Image (cartoon, rainbow, N blue to C red; front, side):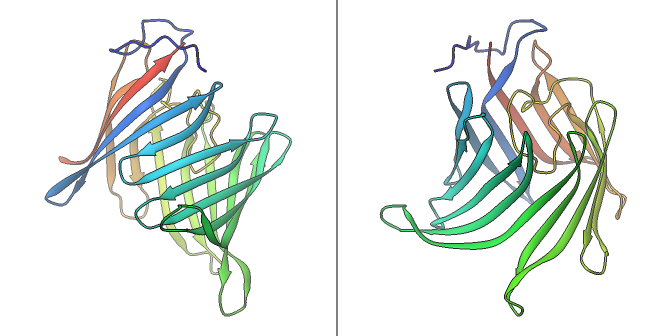
Amino acid sequence: MLSFLILSSGCEPDEKARCYPTRITKKISLGTSTTDIIADYKYENDTLDRIVRSDYQTHHFEYNDAGYIVKISRKNRETFQNHESRLIYDGALTVKSDEFLVMLDRFTQEDKEVTQTGYREFVYDGMKVIEERLFEENDSLGKMELSVVKEYEYDLSGNIITYVALSQPLNDTLEAFSFTYDSYLNPYSSLNLIFEGESYINNVTQKTDLLTGDVYDYQIQYDHTGYPDQIIIKQESYMLEIINFEYICR
């Protein structure tokens, strides 16, 4: 089990402290109403074991002997589905993620029917993913085809500063964003997570939609160690999301 010091109001000031999220609460605006999602992070042997969410989802993580994630199961107890990722490595680098949809038995929650829906391939410059290729099942051809290419650029700290998604084979731009960051630690920076379009180094302070010109501002409050305590995401004066964090530190 983890030998962490738990403090009710964040961690004591300590530049060497490493903090891990234990609970993340999101209040998301949906027009005239809001919805709350709570995610509890559970650890075993210094690694993330599962995330239990209030929206009927539980995410389980499996690791190889080197400590890298080899499988993520995202079970939804309401839809009786499990979206599963199975990771393949070249050394320390994730080079492929096979994606599956697993139908669950309504009574036992055990796997009932497994269908591969696609896979992702990753291209690197050093340790950074600069291109992500999404392959999906083409029902008419009965085979996997390249559907989207995602391109990433980074700053010197390793933060993603531009992201562009291009449809294939026409190469049309589906979406494109630019990002600016603070100099504080990201809530997930101590976790060994797989690449899912985020860099987990510092915290986004502003996101700009390069296609529409919309700008999203991130107002951040920090705890004693410099980790985000609360993030408020706004578009102009409209509040989109409020995220609150709780940590365990060592």
